[in-house]
Length: 424
Ligand code: GDP
Image (cartoon, rainbow, N blue to C red):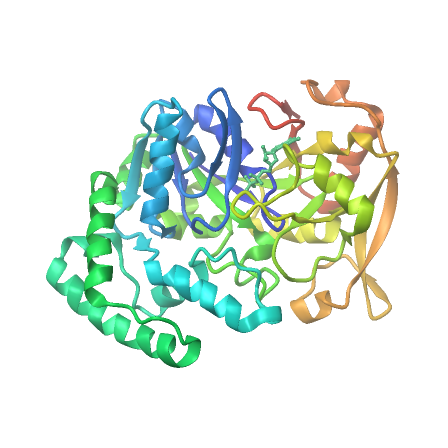
């Protein structure tokens, strides 16, 4: 059975925690898209970890963690994270890297920075991890797959060809130092050394694992609204964040994905630019940000404060639909325990008309939130383990959201730890 864990919103929904929790019963955990731009925060017996490249399964002895072909693989970040995990007492995780995964090149990170500099006030708010230049090159067919590191002659020849075009941009558009073939080649040889022990034919491995009846988890990064096709284009990420892409980014048959667990956060947060209809500001936002997540809503990669908002039924319903949700995991609900009243965005007013359908970007920019206000429960719900024990207003909030989004909430997360979960 293959399960996917994906986000319905703008990312940071708590997918890391849900994956870590479901990984207990999994044999294999696969990252299938994205790169070191977003991070998962995981709290367990070994401490608190921010993972950017390693799958969340690395904390269990019984799992194999896989970096699929769809990932933007930053090899030094991977290597450093692996070492850090081991140095902090976690038994050496079993990790495999797809021989078809492509490599984030040192110049992808530079181009990401230079382009954001060039755009100034019109920038995307990129984390400058090289993700957009990486995927541009991948689809322009001038990227480098991990297996290419093992063919030195053709690698050097291709590198010279690619750097020729990169240097034109560096010289004439960005006015920055030029790239040297020998230097990048040497760096790639160091990458090869770091990655070599883990490289294998991942799709063949997974094919066999499926036939042996292994439990496989696909771990998504970011959320539906950051998907390049179905999200708030162009303020999106550069690889698909949808469960459907799990089949491609891991190299497995699409019909094997039997369960799609979509993680939905009990309030909203977003990073980067783009329309955010239920956004709140000032002291109201500061307080939610301070209390949010586990130690505040600040980016796991950049540390920058996240934009905050109330729960958005329109965005979440759409986000769940486009994922193909079978189960909703409703997270970080405990954080709302301080509020007397909780506004929920139930519609968008666009040009004087209220809609519950999530629109394309141009209309989204014009949307104003329609709020309904629900009573708060004013207690700390951490530690509660059964649905019936939750305060009535809290259950009402869950049931209200469930009705609005139209997908079953089967898990409720009421704390950052592995056991802070209520099954329904
Ligand atoms: P991801 O990228 O979707 O994995 O999201 P993050 O890593 O940004 O996770 C959100 C933060 O919320 C992390 O610091 C988690 O430890 C924390 N977290 C996850 N679930 C819960 C929860 O139910 N309650 C609280 N208070 N924190 C949570």
